[in-house]
Length: 90
Image (cartoon, rainbow, N blue to C red; front, side):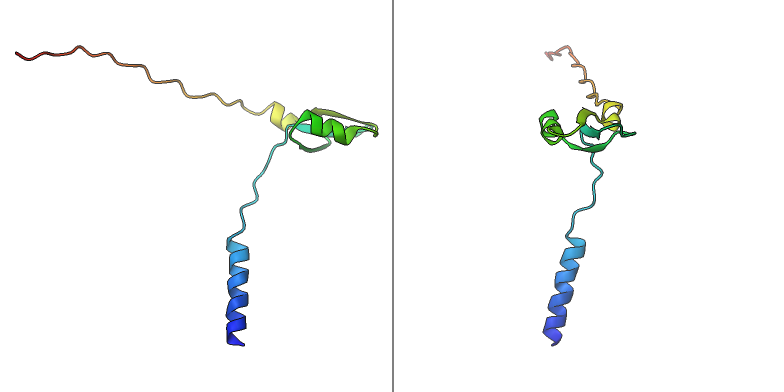
């Protein structure tokens, strides 16, 4: 009985601490149905995925406003090369 309790606690601990954190994810495209106000359901990474869900319905796809107006990634500038004179010792 004691072994079963420890096994259950071990499984529960792995389930709680082993689970990944919930990550906020911004999908690129939103499905807007009819005359819906707001961005719609934003669950699509590609335009093709969104259009496949919209086919046969009164819906259209648009770029997710959160994704569209987010700050764009700019890589850091490369450091400049420093050319030094070679010193020759006699």
